[in-house]
Image (cartoon, rainbow, N blue to C red):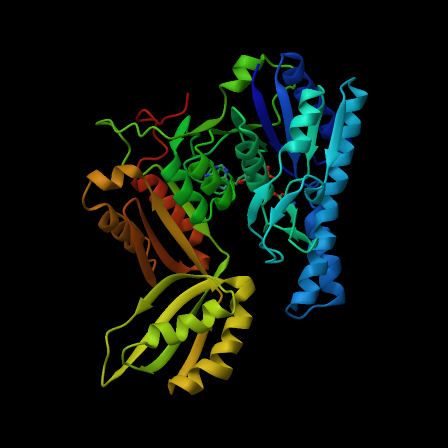
Length: 427
Ligand code: ADP
Ligand code: ASP
Ligand code: MG
C-alpha cells in the first residue's frame, strides 16, 4: 500500500464523461490498496472563460484590488471540478470528500494571481485518508495569512499537486494530462517529437522554465526541493488498463543522472511566446545603471529574464531585457515615466513580437560547440538572433516570433531528436 497523489489537468476533467473516467481510474488505484489524494484542474476552458468575463468589465491593467477579485473568481473553476469529481467518486461507491485550498489549508503569500505556497496543513488530509476516504483537493489555489483566496499562476495545479504530495509524504505524484509524457519538444508543434521515458530533474527544470507548459516550473522546483518523484502520463488510456502497466507508463522525472557515452547532447527544445523585449537606449554608462533600471522593475514585482548590456560608445550604452508579456505595458510605462528621466537615457523601445527558443540537455556539460551548432542551424534558416543567454545545460535565443516553428523544427533535426538514440529514448 502506498500514498499516491494524482493530478488531472483541464482536458482530462473536460466533461462529465471524462470526470467519470477519472473517478473510475482513481477507484482502480484505491481498490488496489493505495491511499489516494487527487488534485484536479478546472474543466478545460473554464479559467479562460472566467478571466475573459473579468476582462470585459475591466479591460485595463489590473489593480491589486482587482487582482484579488480575479483570484476569487478563477478559484471557482477548481472548486466546481473538485466537487464534481468527489460526486463521481461517490457514485463509484467510494468515500470521497473535496476541499478548497482554504479548507486544507494551503497557505500562500499574498501575491494575487502568482502566489507561492508557503505551508500545507496535512492534518485534515491524513485524518480523511485514515478513515478510508479519497481526498480531492482543488488545484491552483490557496489562502493568504488574512484569509484571502489566492491563485498560483496559470498551470498552477501541477504545483498544488506536487506540494501536497511533498507535504503528506506521498510515494509518488502522477500528473495525468492530454499527452502521454514529456516529449523532446511540444508534439503539437513538431509531430516528429519523441516521448522521453525518463528525463532528469535538472533538464525538466530548464525545459519548464524555458516554456514547456507540460509542467509548471514551480511544480518541478518543489519536486527537486523535496525529492518527490513525478511521472507525467496520459489520462486518455482506457481507465481499466493494468495498474502496473499504467504506473510504468509516461515519463519519469528522475534524480539519477544517467551519464552514459550515448547521452544525447540535447534532450529537448523549449519555446516561449510569452515574453516581450524592452530596450533602453542611450543610457549614460556609469556604475549602478543595471541596478537603477532593473531595481525599479523588480520593485514593481516584474520578473526579468534575458538581459543584455551592450558595450559603451561615447559614454552611452543600450540595455535590453525581456519580461512576461502581461507585465510589458506596465514595465514600459514605468521606464518611460520614471526611470528614463531619472537616468537621463534617450528613449525606451519595446517589441512584443518575439519568442525565446531554448535547447536543453545535461549532455551539454560534456560537449563543446553545442551553442555554435545551434547558431549555425538558425543562420542556415535565415533567422536573426536578437539575444542569447546560456547556462550550463541550456542555450536560449530570442528571435522574431514569426520564425518560432521554423527554428524549433530546424533545431529538432539538427540535434537528431527525431531519432531514437540513447538511454533517454522512448520505450
Ligand atoms: P493540463 O491541462 O493537463 O495541465 P497542459 O496543457 O498544461 O495540460 O500541458 C500539456 C500540454 O503541454 C500538451 O498538450 C503539449 O501541447 C504541451 N507541451 C509543451 N511542451 C511539451 C513537451 N516537451 N512534452 C509534452 N507536452 C508538451
Ligand atoms: N485552471 C488553471 C489554469 O487554467 C490551473 C491549471 O489548469 O493548472 O491555468
Ligand atoms: Mg497544465
